[in-house]
Image (cartoon, rainbow, N blue to C red):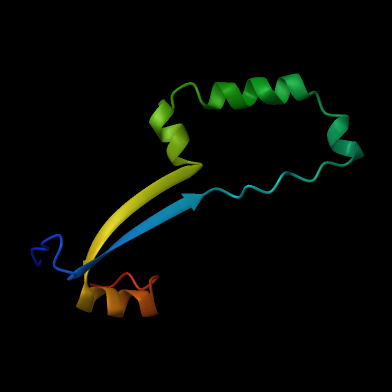
Length: 84
């Protein structure tokens, strides 16, 4: 691990916003025949033991990482590579 000193231009700040699929669901005539109140009650029951933070984490996360210049050059070419 390298110590990064602000103001020296030796690191990047990378902000990652991860958002659950924001696309509205496709609803057809069959969906409209469902008991929507029952469906909502079932969803609420499933969430009873989930903390507000856990519920938020399921739909949105922001992560901020600081990478030295050398690490950034490696990471930016393949950000999905999770090997150290």
